Image 1 (spheres, rainbow, N blue to C red):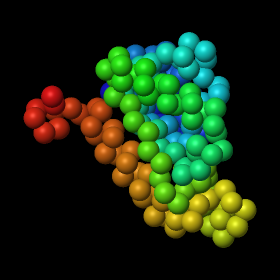
Image 2: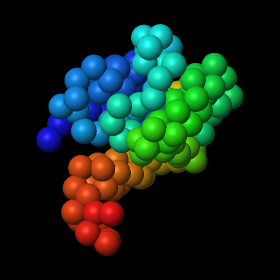
Image 3: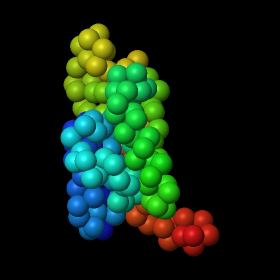
Image 4: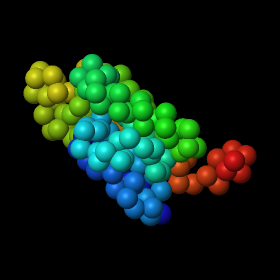
Length: 147
């Protein structure tokens, strides 16, 4: 069973890959920059269950990206594809990478990392990713026998 996870451009790449290759059964996109999506993918529904985790500044910085995301979520739900988006408080774009762990003072002072402790932020992200992938890839482990 394959899944795909990416950050920024990599998040869009994962959404695109899942749309093109049915072997991908789940997608996780961290603060995804959705502009690189092909027109057919951006205007369609997601092909696999997808989790979008975004910095709490996502809507303010990426207004058009936010519109694309909301449309993707709505069309996907209409087609029965599970898709959710959450903002992680106290994060910025680079909190979804390891840069804030390597240089916390610098990344926070120049505003590319949020106010949350970098290790704590990544811990939240990893827990969300793991919970979503377990849910999407292993329905038999859900309550009610996967229904």
